[in-house]
Length: 223
Image (cartoon, rainbow, N blue to C red):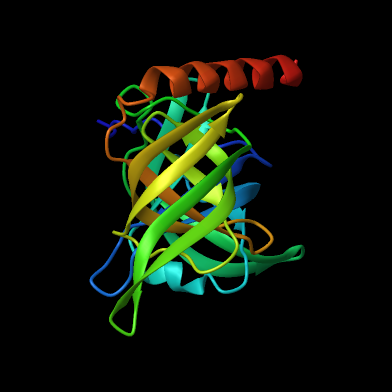
């Protein structure tokens, strides 16, 4: 009697943008790296290797637990993967192979949408034993009632830092306390920071409405 074959794991589409999320370790904070699917290579009857664009300076991800996250037809999907570096005729790549089950996370997470809106982060740092006020202007690229991922130029606040996030949203100014959870590396080498709001309910309804509207417009533009 033949063994029952497990259904193949869901995969992102070729040319789809995905995020590699490296979990924090004892010596380094969490990191998010946005990249793009370049190819899907069959590596077994029920498995495929996802070929991803690889940016310079990210080779250290091979030594850390990593999840690949993308948006599928039924919502946000997250899958633990093993990464190794490689090269194809079009340049350096990541080769990602699933090492666990892919799960949908959107139902248990806050609704997120790609939105470009001004954000300012402010926090208190310390220099020579004296408090120093820091302030950085950045741009949100991913916003939810639970937090924001923003592009940033300048010194990044360390993971674990408490900041005040000021978001400009359709003429409204939303100030709330947030916690830096990880840094991000975008395609092209840009840097970003992900923060989680301490009290998601404070402006949750307002941000959720804006996120749904942004997603609705994005879907209409794809048709």
